[in-house]
Length: 102
Length: 165
Image (cartoon, rainbow over all chains, first blue to last red; front, side, top):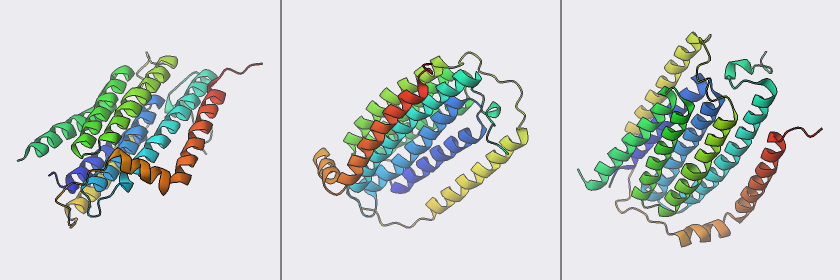
C-alpha cells in the first residue's frame, strides 16, 4: 500500500503550483483554472485520509462531495463574472482590472 | 516496489506535469486540455485509493462539466490574444515564486517528519455508506449545498446576461 505521506506530498505540490499560477498569471481564465487545481489538491488529502489515514472512515469522502459542489458553483459564478467583465471593459488581463485597488 | 506504488508514481507524474503545463503553455486552449489531463490523473488516484464513487464524480464534474465550462468561457472572451505584452510586475513574480517555494519546502518538511500510525488495510467506503452518512449526519449540509447550487445557477444567469434595456 502507498503510504499516506506520499499523497500528502503530491497534494502539497499541486496546491503550490496552483497558488503560484493564481499569483502570477495574467489571463483571468487561467487564474480560475488554478483555483480549481488548489481545491482539487485539497480533495486528494481528504480522500487519502478517508482511505488510509489513522482513523479511516467515510467522512472524508462525504466532505469531498461538498468541496466538489462548492467548486462547481464557484466555477459557474466566476465565469459569469468574467464574461460580464469582458463585455463591459473589453479585456481579460488581470492587471487592467484594478478599479478597487488603492 | 508493489504494483500500487508504480501506478501511484505514474498518475502522480501525470497530475504534476498537467499542473505545470497549465502555467507553462502559451495557448489558452492547450492549458485547458492539460487541466483536464491533470484532473483525470487525480480521478485515477481516487480509484487507486478505493474511492470509486468519488472518482466517478470527479470525472463527471471536473473532467466533464467544469472543463467544458472553461472552454465556453475561453471561447466567449479574448482567446486569440494570448500575450499581453511586457509584464510590469517582474519583481512580484520572483517574490511570489520565492514565497510559494518556501511554503512548499515547509509543507514537505512537515510531511516528511510526520509520525503517523497507518492502518495497514485500506478502508473501502461503499456508495451505500456515503449515502447513509450524507442523508443522516450531514442532511442539513446537503440541503445547504442544494440551496448553494440553486443560487449559483440563478446568479450566474443574472450576472452573465446582456442588460435588457
